[in-house]
Image (cartoon, rainbow, N blue to C red):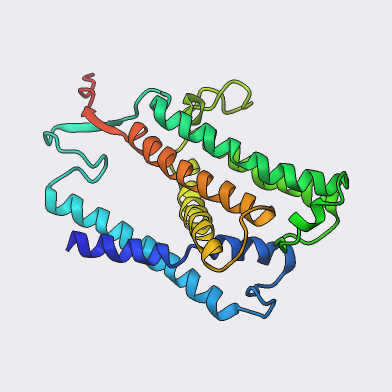
Length: 259
């Protein structure tokens, strides 16, 4: 039963790999279209349903495992029944290999941003041929570059670094009003698991599909595929590490005070 629930959840989430790109296009343009520019609301609805089904089956698989294996519903571990209090681990960094993978995921955006920057500055005429791929963000060149750098890539890098550094588990001093408080686990994990499958599958499939279809990977499309693929897999590894490092544990409760 557990393998069935997990398999259905994985297939549903894999089938929804383009839903994030659809949501970005919907916010920026007010519509959803296919590669030919035609309205594609039916496919968008199907992808949203796939996301909902994947999340539902993933939660069901986790709940089923904990009930059948006799683990604690609060921390997911096996322990004596006298454990009465949930404790959270101290902030820690991810293992070195995970951190290096995360840094590679951040650096993978440099070619993509570099091509957008050169195009926005109009520094080269030969670059127009490399920029022939149609971007998903309409608008003036400088506006598109600023939007990519500050609104999309900036938060993406911040999220990835937060998952592998200690300040992602406890708010640092520069977070006024929140400094020293524990970061809720869902705060970085929810956006990470929403973004990671989409970008990992989209970037990887694009790099595999392009040569088979006769397209070149040199240019904006190739840089985007590289950035999304590497970042998506790096975000997946960082999210798994963060989920394990931040997992709460049940400890014996304090004895009741007597008056």
